[in-house]
Length: 295
Length: 341
Image 1: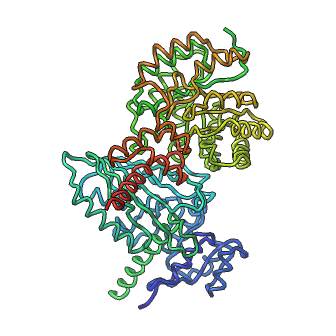
Image 2 (image 1 turned 60 degrees about the vertical axis):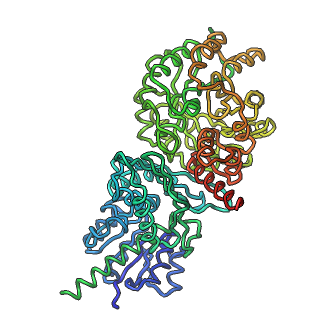
């Protein structure tokens, strides 16, 4: 099967984890890792693995645009705004893992199909990737009036960017719960827990369901189906226990264990972002290949 | 009445007490109490959802009245007292802080877990920009060693906080631990040091006195103990005790006693006392607002609420993790079922 060439922009933790995941892909061929620090651990690892490395950022890549058709941007929101414009001009498809949200929000199990030809998509937040599938799973059975998610992540896996801009997490996730999850109103809460050893990412989804009678059985079935769908690209994604119903209120408990590729296993929050990004890129690539075959 | 004060007291009943009454404050209650506290010359009155701005949620309980209405109502009836609001980054946002300031809040208390001060720089900076007196509030202070607390307090000082509080959210600190912490902060910081107690181990007053002895000049109290868990240092009692010690609070003791008796006591669903669950909060080092949630979960799963609280303490659960209560309760129930078989 032919592969589509991709590049990773950003050689930090996320970029490096992407590099390891992409090596396993059957439809994506990682050719290039782009950073700005020649001595960074990420670029060093990329060189060791035989990838082309570019150490003068987006500028260097734009001089050799043939290296990739799909770009993963794992830099920062501020940098992405500039990258998005340049990469659009270069005709590349871009996955934005930063909170910049230039392009539409995508959660693979919910709305990827609508964005197969998008030039830029945003992956919302880790909390969004973990919980929006469940909001959608309830909402597709019975309308959700209000959904609220609580993401608890270990202090160790919350980077300086998340910490300095914590409102960005809650606001972006709330919006995702509404726009992609389908809840009429959304709210997000994030809690950092410093316990040692670090705790695995946990997410709780509370929702208020519309209607006189709550269709418990069908909702549970939908939730379990969704668990399997997410698990297909995030193996450590699981329900911690049966959902709890209380009148028209449901509470769903999730745990996300990382794959332990580059990031530690407790960093399910970071793993679900990189895994979702690879999943989207793979669907894009399949779509590209299919279109080529047709024409 | 004198405006000379050795210690500046913040009355937290209209915020911390929100937990105890499941966030059911009405505009009328808040207006009446805030007005009376102003007349008693209380310097700061905190008004917010128990979990701070934006705390109204399924996770923590919905507010009966939008807290912004309560803040506006309180601000409209005070002449000398300043209205304070609490904000926990991760729950509330800068947007809500701006609204609270527009409605008349004069003090922002920005709260983080004791080890996570670095989620607060934007909020502290905004509070300063808005012209608010700004407090850094290091919650669950018993969970970190003193050196860590000092490091985190210095961060908040560097972000621009005017005061940093040692917050004993679980009511778990013992007097010698309070002494060590306050002394270390006084030795290191240039700004004011404050102390917030919970009475779960019946140590709120003792700990508060130790804190003041070590140089804390900002103290929290809740009138009639209207706060989470077993409540906080009882404000009217503290005013009396400090008066006997010759420490000036500037607060009218008689008026405070009347507010406690005539206005606050009728709001309480039951008198604040140290129940067995309240005691376990302090003993296990669990966030005081977990109390009612643990009791509800215990009822649902037919288990002892103390077992839930102890297990939460073992797992080092932090403030805000109310969702863990159901989770842990269901695990305990399941484990017991297996055991019985």
